[in-house]
Length: 111
Image 1: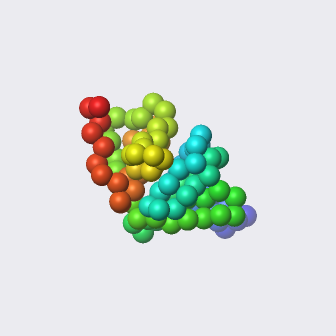
Image 2 (image 1 turned 90 degrees about the vertical axis):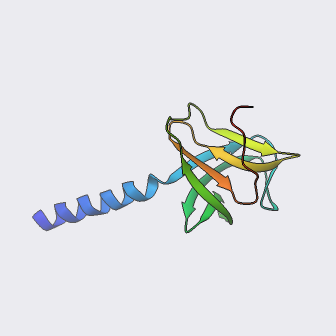
């Protein structure tokens, strides 16, 4: 009984840890990330080995990105675009986390 309980706690802990690095975003328009087109819709985003892994249903793309942590939490999830639908950055609401796609130029947060 004790082994089963410990195993259950260990499995739950791994599941909770794995899911804590997965974020959700909704695209209201077709967008381009690193030359790859994403149709409008809901996506799950995770960060693995220097890549953003973007999933919608069975479709998955991986693009070079960096994960950054800000001092204060973002109030809402925000999508930052550069010219004509090129998604450059995603700021995840309720977290300190943003993902910046590697081909994107740095965004000036003062504008």
